[in-house]
Image (cartoon, rainbow, N blue to C red):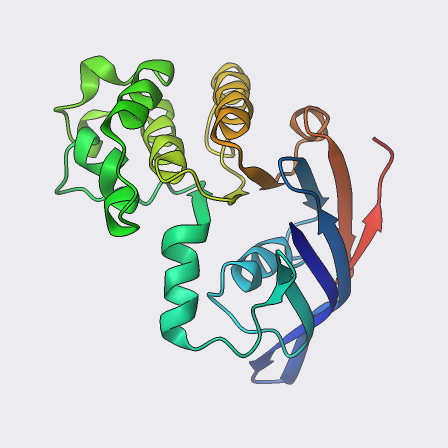
Length: 221
């Protein structure tokens, strides 16, 4: 479903170009899950941004169902983000002026894939049904993260990208949120690429890779 081949990315700094990714390779089969680990600053978030089309690789290829992201215009990349992927980040990125119900349905409506029955099911599974008329500022961190997960899955994307989605939660909440994420990703028929520092959480996923000095190295499952 997702293939990354020899991807390089560097950023301009006052001291010159700083290489972040140095020939990254990975594969994620359809319907499977992969945990990407590595030290802070190793390029994990940069790789997710490239896959999401938020940044462009300097060289190499990123293939989605055999079709390259390279060469796509901004409108095509925006469509990929809107219809093809669900994004879950540590910061939640909910829309403060919208209710929980509206936040849940937001991306699915943009993608013209709003299914009220599926969104209602997500809200129930995520424990959000009593909170649908509240606003993000009225929720705990764990509740906000569950809204973010529901929003990402509401359009049944082919790929979910999760960047440290439990990083700001306590251990118990992290376990609960990850369990829900894995179950619902499976029910949505999506693939999951999860960035995490936690070996314990990573062990719950099917495949594991480690990013070190800009290169992805296999880790024992």
